[in-house]
Length: 206
Image (tube, rainbow, N blue to C red; front, side):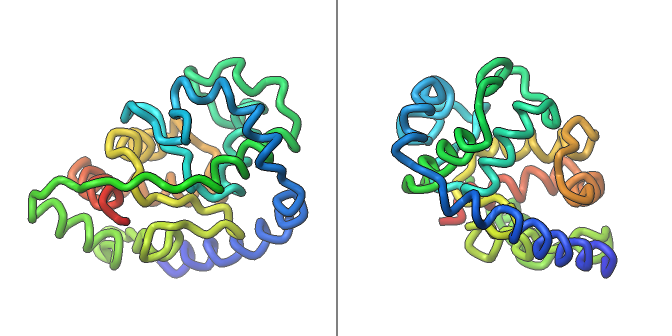
């Protein structure tokens, strides 16, 4: 656990400085023009009508920019995104990211199952020391807003289906663009029930 937390701290410091200047130059107006085609899956305002696709509204710009560039460069494989950002420059990626980051995030309602909610709350806030799972809040903040300087995404209001699918992909190693394998390490220790509980909890974390 100490080794993982130390890795988190190192990642936060190294990545933050590298992205500061690029984010400062991001142009939301230019991003709006580039994002026209994105609305088909992610909604006009960045709130997806389908749980299969992530909400982008209110997401950390640094995280979105990284994902766009990772998909473009083949570091993250998303079949539904094939060809969508192949022509994007780094500036395009940051502009689109800024456009969505400035939007109001989605407001979700968690399933009312008390046991599921409590399990999700416990994992999110405190983790599971016996399994070596750190608290989600350590990287994604207690309110689920994420940490832009460390490129840690906002989770608040994210679709349950998408969050679960993402955790499953990390656990299986099908997604591998997480710095220092942080999410692969964590997700591999989570049961299906753990993933469902956390996904449900963050949906309603407004």
